[in-house]
Image (cartoon, rainbow, N blue to C red; front, side, top):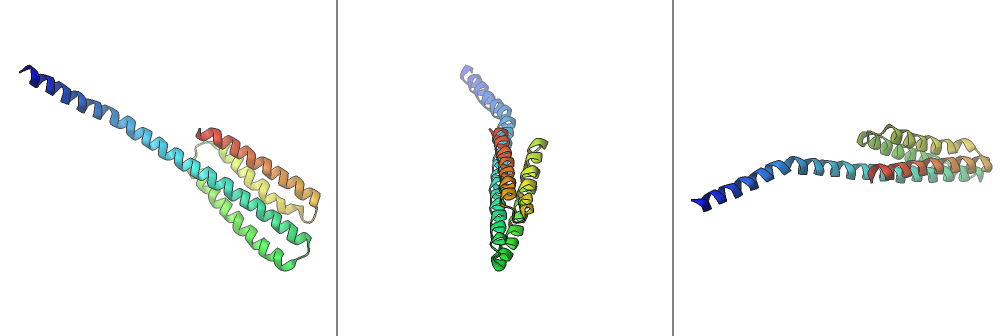
Length: 148
């Protein structure tokens, strides 16, 4: 009779252990999934904003060279890249609950958009481009701490 009770206690202990750990495993899996989604969203935003910054530079240089056809292409490409960056920004907003991160992302987007205000002034363009780079770096630095 004693071996039966030993088996019953062993089975009951195993079942109790499985039931008790299930909620913790589920929570850990949910947190890992959210972390993965955040990393993907933050990375996509950083890539999109860098592409947008590059597009702004292309637009500036074609306008400065008075290459009207290339400028028109760069202008339209710049708008496409801005749309892509805004889409990545919206995705980022959906997966984060950190207002500071959203503020930094918006600043990076705004500073990058501002590059076109340089018109044909190379000094202003360099300054605005530098400001955009700093805003992007600030976002990336903060985001990296948010997912570690």
